[in-house]
Length: 206
Image 1: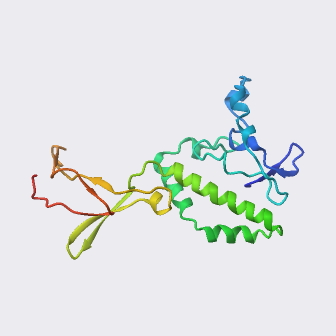
Image 2: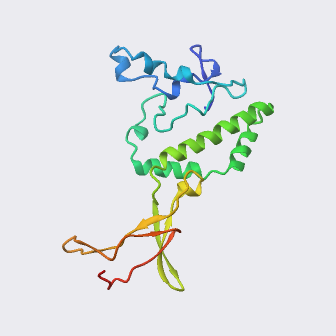
Image 3: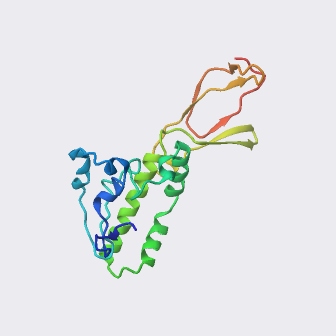
């Protein structure tokens, strides 16, 4: 599935390089609309090292944000940013050792091909995480109890996966009135170096 595919004779063959850049069928193709040459030939710039045991798979031209399945898939067409984050979080958490172990189970009996496939999967995992994790902002929050009082703990999976390096966060607290939906600032914005932010005094008005 990664680098293998089939040819027009339905024989097992290296994956068609164009498969990840366009679908096999689309309304535009069905209506016989001419494709711009620079779009149709974009994948020609990809360089492949093809091993018979692996097929055609590369990482430099892999763009998860523009990746296309062979046939239109509603799961990709209707994907929301939250869906992309969920997928990226799962992919970025797969450890290197697990990927190497899974490839080893294929028993390719070709050390060069096995090493190549591992490199491509690791590079694609990094690309997927970097693109789909989005802006360098925390995506998860939780309240923790500490000896000095409750605090807000921030989680950023992109940084945890080594895809971003952040120097801290800017935080500002607001009081929210459920009846009027009005927001009142509780002091000025402050910058924190870590991921733990003490909760403000709810009675404070400045």
